[in-house]
Image (tube, rainbow, N blue to C red; front, side, top):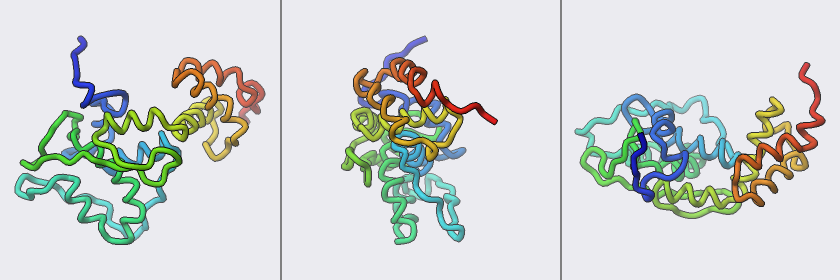
Length: 205
């Protein structure tokens, strides 16, 4: 059964409940996990792993804390050691603030208004603020960096190789297909199987 949703709240894969629940903790949403997904899978710009001495466990939130998840993370990531990486991670992750751990829409958390303003930092072509996940999705959809990343993800999967084993010449035809077809993934599949990289790939050992 289909149900109508507000396009200002949900638009595309990134706002589906299944995605939100898959990138969340048991009881709380996870801006860090959601932010890393976008950086790694859609922008091909994965952040470095945290230093081994850093405690990455998030204290359990409760209603008595009178803090949102965002407020708690802003406080814990304020140190220079954390802020250098979390500026880009949290900048994206906070844009999902309207979605709880189950992917349900909310405007308040622990009695406090949710702040879903986020920011892209260090990208090729979409740096700047956005308001909420739907607005984030619009910016990602118009990004050449995202198109190139998606093309490399699909080609890497088809060839069973890591992204760092691909070069620009292999990915370029797929990126051009995405651009000319205005993001049509069906055309991307056609371009992939017609590409030299796919047709002349080496047999797996």
